[in-house]
Structure formats: structure tokens, C-alpha cells
Image (cartoon, rainbow, N blue to C red; front, side):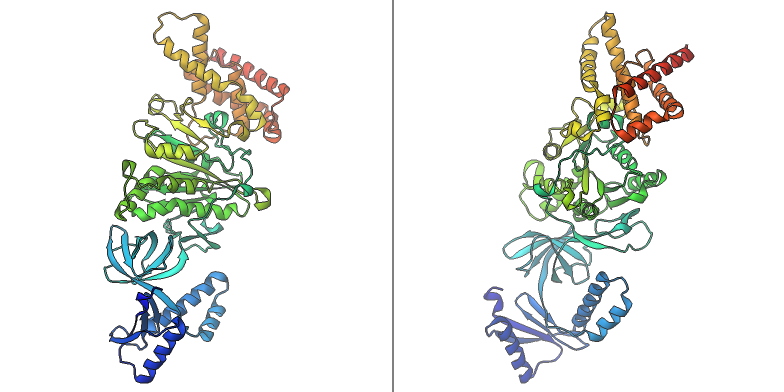
Amino acid sequence: MTEDMLKTAVLYSAEAPNEEQTRRFRDFVRGKYGKDVDFRWEKTEDMLGGGFRLQIGSEVYDWSVEGRFQQLKEAIQSVSKRNQNVVPLIKETIRSWTPEAIAQEVGVVTTVGDGIATVSGLENATFGEILIFKNGARGMVQDIRENEVGCILFDEDGDVSEGSQVKRTAKTAGVPVGENFLGRVVDPLGVPIDGKGDIAEADYYPVEAPAPGIIRRQPVNTPLETGILAIDAMFPIGRGQRELIIGDRQTGKTAIALDAMINQNGKDCITIYVAIGQKTSSVVQLTNTLKKYDALSHSIVVLASASDSAPLQYIAPYAGCAMAEYFMHQGKDVLIVYDDLSKHAVAYRTMSLLLGRSPGREAFPGDVFYLHSRLLERAARMADEYGGGSITALPIVETQAGDVSAYIPTNIISITDGQIFLESELFFSGQRPAINVGLSVSRVGGDAQTKAMKKAVGTLKLDLAQYREMEVFSQFASDLDEATRKQLVYGQGLMRMLRQPQYHPYSQHEQVIILVSSMAHVMQDVDVDEVEAFIKGLLEKFRRECPEIGDEIDREKTLSDELRSRIVEVAEAYAKDFLRRRQ
């Protein structure tokens, strides 16, 4: 505490202290701070139940009935959090509890509005610390200046007024975590909002935590299968990877993330969906879809809706990541979806401008890159000696008119390990998922694929690139030779092969069968409009007549030349039968 703040001690009570009480107060201050200070008494009617409140600078010793009750309440809460059978312990705590002269640093609200409060007097407050306002509202220190701090509010600011008191808690912002959160919908503070009652927490994790260091990580080399053929074949995602899903609005970004979550059924992988600035009705629909496909039991939905304040939208992805870290530290695999970080950046910009920070490009503050890098770097695959768990992140970013060179998209592209670019033109032409093969990439590549998948893919990306190039030139040609025509038909067939209905993820052996058949030109003579029906019938034939092929691929995760030949043989026989029936 500074010298200026130690000049005066103010005693608030209903009655004036006598000489003996005044002497004891002076001795207490001298013993606590090592010097004498001016002492004055101020009458207050706030303490009708008795007691007093001693304020020295920004520190307050609350010896009122209300203050002692608050101390007892905190002692009971501390016991309740640490123990399961709390009733006898609470009784014992009440019997043995004695009040203590504990200093609380107290500040005063100078301005409040739009979810932001400016507080003076909290000279020792730290960034990210939780503050408690007199009406019980919670806030977090987000801006530290010379004589005041800027605080974002997590509760309604209607009851927070200028001049009201604010207390430090010396605790950083955190969120309750635990197994009981699976299957539930919660807000960014961990409070359930699905109407199913309270959730018993197992622990309390800080929302802001440092990312694991290099030594604690291991390489990303284990696939996290999405069940989407185009992704698993060409842009594989590994456990611990960060793969961006980017595209204009209404191009199927959330659909891809949802399919990936559904595909984790039975694979011992926890999934977390963080909705930032989404319509509540959309999240309700998504939750019902997860429930319909038996995926909600291994999922947590964190919702900061469009109607929530900017501070809640800002903290949502960090809270979701803290919940994911709880499971990762237990050695489990987690898939977390941030939908979407564009709205998260806008919420942070709103907060920053209200806090008075200088705007930069597109009015975003200068640290907007750090906003997302410190979040996405927490995705990792831990080394075996540290549990071997992983967090795989699928951040979603919305572009405007396909502009991937805008500020926020380029920032996040540079942080992540690849991106899946969805194109409006492809989406509206019926190519769904509308993945642009040319602009999409996975920087982990084949390291995150099984040997079977790697071998089955073959030259798929190269063939599609040649098809796209040939398609452009064929638009200007009036007469095509037979080889060019066949190449175009083959390319069209590959594009149709990559179409996939939503909520119908393929298993690994189904993807291998489709890829091997396609790369062997088995579908060359199948009409483009009938490719999807052909694939459906082909998979049914393998499931019914050759289940041992699928079992071997799933078990061995390799594709021998002999097995490949058997797949092609069965596929060619089915193609002949299919074409004969279509004639």
C-alpha cells in the first residue's frame, strides 16, 4: 500500500468509539502497518446489528454482522467443495469457527455500462482476477491502469451502480469441470441452462491456462476420423491437431463439425461444442441432433448466445477449453469445436473499445492475434508420461464473399495446422460437403492416416487437380478427343464420389473400399447421377457378402496388394451387375 493511502484510518460504526477502543484501534494499525496514521470516526446506519468496519486506504476490515456472516459462509463453501459428505463437516465448521481480522481490498465503481465497469482503489488487483460487487455480481479484471482497473461483468449490470463497493477475491476466473457435465448444456460460467438441475463438479479449472510446453507434447500421428470421406482421405486430422473450418455463411461449416462429433460414437473420445454468438434456436436444434444420433452422452455444449453480453461471449471458448483440459489430464481424447471465432473476435473488439483501448486494423485491438493463439495453442497431444491425452481443435471462421485474406481469417490460418475451405459456388451446385480441394490443406498430412487409408487414396488429389484444370479449358473447346472426354468423366465421377449426406459418416473400411474402387476406375462407366446410388449398393454388398474384408481393414489398418485385388474384383463384379440392371 502506498504512503498516501496509509495517511488515514476511517472507522465506520453506529456509535462513536470510546478512548480505550480508539487506543486499541491505533495499536492494531501500528502493529499491522508499522506506523501511526490519522484516525477518524464516521457514523453509519448500515450496521444496525452492531459491529464496525475499519478502512485503511483500499483495505477494509469488516467486523460487522454482515461481514462475519460472509466469512462463515466462505468457510462453509470451502468445506463443501472439498468433501462429499458435507453435513457433519458443516456442523463442525459452524461450532469451531471464530472470526478473523482479515483485510479485504475494496474499491469503488466510478463508471458502469454495456457490461464494463471501471473501478478505483484496487491497486493490487491482477489481470484476470475475479471481483465481487456489493450486489453479488461477478466481474473479471481485464484492463489495468495507473489509478483504476477496467472490469468486464459476467452478470447483469443493472444493479451495479456508480459508488458501489467492489471486493477482490485473489482468485483467477475459472469454471467447474467434471464427468457430470457430459450430456449437458451450460453457460460459459459452467451454470447449467438445460433445465436438468445442478451439476456436481469434480474440480475447478482456470479459464486461462498456459499451453503445454514442447517437452510435454508428442507428435500428431494418430488419426481422428471425421467420417467425412473428402476430409479423411485428403486432409486428415490427427489427435492434437488444430484444423480450421473456413467459408462464407451457410456453406456447411457447422455440419462438418457436427458430423465429426457424431462419428466419435464408441471411440472413447469426448466432444465439446462451444457456441459463440449463435442463435439459441440453432443450438437447441444441434443438441437435439446430437441426442438423436446418441452423441450427446459423450458431449458438452457450452452456449454464449447472440443475446448474451460481449464478456460472456469472450470467455466462452476459454471455458470450453478448460473443460477439455480436465479430460485431457485424465489421459482421454477430446474434440472441441469453436463455432465461431469470427464472432468471438467481434465480442473482444466490442469489449476493448468500451475499455478505451486503441483500435487497429478493422478496429480490432492490437492483441487480437494473441487472443486466439493462446486459445488454440492449448490443443495438444500429451506425451505418454504426462497421461497421453489430447485436445483436437476445430475452430470455425466465417468469411465475407470468400475473402480468406481478411484480418481474422489470415490470423487464424497462420495459427492452425491447416484449413478446410468451403466454397459457396460448390455448395449451391450440390457438391456437399462443399470442400475446395485446391485451397484446403492439412499440414499434418499422411502422418495422421492409417497405412490402409494412405495406400487407398493414391493419386486422388492429383487426379482432382488435373480434372479442375481440364474442366476450365474444356469450356472453350468445341470438340474433345476421346482421352480428354474420359478424363473429364472420371473427374466428374470422383467429385460425385466425394458427395456425402449429412449425419452419415463412413467407417474407415467403407472409406477404403470406396477409394480403392474409384481409383481403379470401377465407376468409369457409371452415369454421374447414379454414382451415389452405386456407392450405397456397393457398400451394402461388401457388408452382406464380404464382411471379413471390412473386419480385416479395421483390425490391421493396412491394405495388402492381395486385399486390394479382392476389393477391386468384388467392385467390378458389382459394377457389371449394376450397369446391366440400369440398361
